Image 1: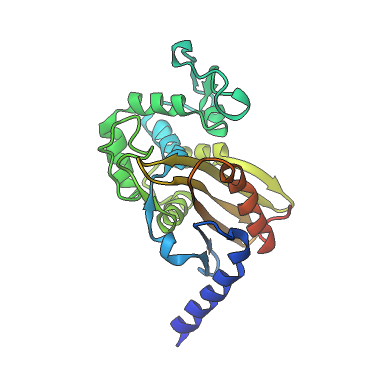
Image 2: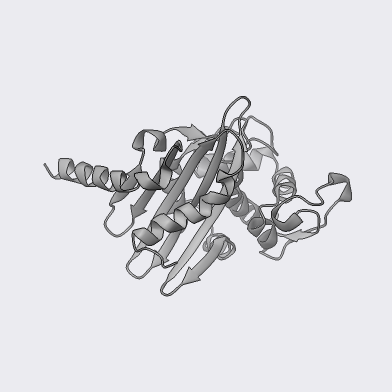
Length: 257
């Protein structure tokens, strides 16, 4: 009976989120760490696996720190003009030198591909499996397995991974976890902090997978969330990932706009 009432409550929450996703194939899932309550839009889609895209910069940041590839957030990689990244990224930010922190904040693909190559496929595979991250398949290539090739993860699994990260259950040093969380901090408000990462990519002949995943810490609870949307092209939904998520979190009184 208790289990039935819990499922019913989840369904009611689910219906309340429909207005955020009119004519959009999407899922959103939120877990309250204090009560274990789960709010979900489209629970069937929340179980489907999609490429993690740039949300994999979260585990790749952990890998860079834990292996020593990046000694800290100020670890710098010089930009190679042969990459021809000028004008790419937020405000054309990719075509220059980056630190681990700035590469995360600007979602710099070439930086994280270089980090993965320096770590090597053996270390990447070992730690992806240690993290129990999605389907744990790194066969798609050391610098692209998360970009619409082999690695896939569901919104449900994103939540589970983020909770293991934040509660120190990934088998990593406390230092790695603390630095990664500091890098992940996206914004804060009165009594809350939001840690997150966007992602966007596509498998061949498939819709674009658009992600925003993370967690909000506030007094008494941590709220883990994952948004995933499908789209025929990157725009215009690519720029709606963060606003949609924040609108839901504000509606649920987890953050203030």
